[in-house]
Image (cartoon, rainbow, N blue to C red; front, side, top):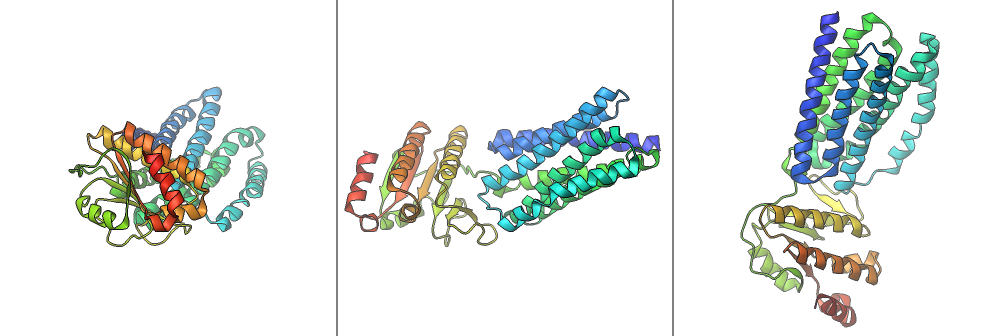
Length: 360
C-alpha cells in the first residue's frame, strides 16, 4: 500500500514539474498569460504534493493552501484563455455556477457528519472542497473552446472536471489508510490527463500567434489608408506574409493569415476566432503582442483592419481616432504597418479628412 502511494506521488510530482517547464516555455515563446497561469498552477501543485506528504502539521496545512492556489490559478488560466480567444461565456452557465456556493456548504456539513473531525473539515476537507469547485468551474468555462481546439479542448475540460470531482471522495475518506492508494492513483491519472491535454492544446498552431517568415511588400511603417480596390491588390502581395487581420469577410483568407472576425456573435463556426466590435482594448492588445512577437523574430508585422465602418457603428468616432492613433504609435515603434481599409464614401468626407490628418 505504501509503495503504491509513494510511486503515484512520484509520478504526480514528475508530471507537475514537466508540465510547469513546458507551459513556462510556451508562455515565453507566445507571451500568452494563460500559459503563464497554467505554468504557475503546476508549480503550486508540485509544492502541494511535496508538503502534504510531510508529517509536520504546519507543512501539511501549507500544502493544503497551495492546493487552493493551484485551483485558483487553473481557474484564472481558463478565464484568461477565453479572453485571449475572445470567447463570450453564456449567461446560462454563469447562472448555473451560482449553485456551487450552497453545494459547497452542504458538502462541508456532510464531511463533518461523516468524519466527526472538525480539524480535518477546517483544513484538508475545506481545501479539497473549494479547490474542487474552482477546478470544475474552470473546466466548465472551457467547453466553448471546442469550436476552436476541437478534441484537445474537450479532453482538457473533461479532465479538469474529473479532477475536481475526485476531490470529493478524497475529503470523505482521506483520513483512512485504505483510501490513500485509491486517492493517489486517481490523482495521478487525472493529473496526467490534465497535463497532457493542456500541453496538447497549447502546442497547437492555432494557439500560437503566427509569425511566418516571409518577404513583406515594400510598404512604409505606421498606418496607411487603403481603398477596397487597393486592398484586394495588396492581398495578393501579402499571401505569405505574417498578417494579423480583423475582417468582416472570412472567405478567401490566405492560409498564413491570423484572422479575427469582427462580430457581436461570440462563436460562428469551427476554427473562426471572433472579437467584439466594442472591444477596442482587446484588439489593441492583440495587435501590440503580434507586432512585438514579429519584431523579435526578425520580421515585419502587417495588420489589416477592413472593418472600420462596422467599428464606427459600435464606437464613438473620437474613440476610434484614439484607437488608430495608438496603433500608429505601436506600428512606428515596432517597425510594422497597419493597413486600414476604408472608402471615402463609407465614412463621409469629413471623417475621411480627419483620418488623413491623423495619419499625417
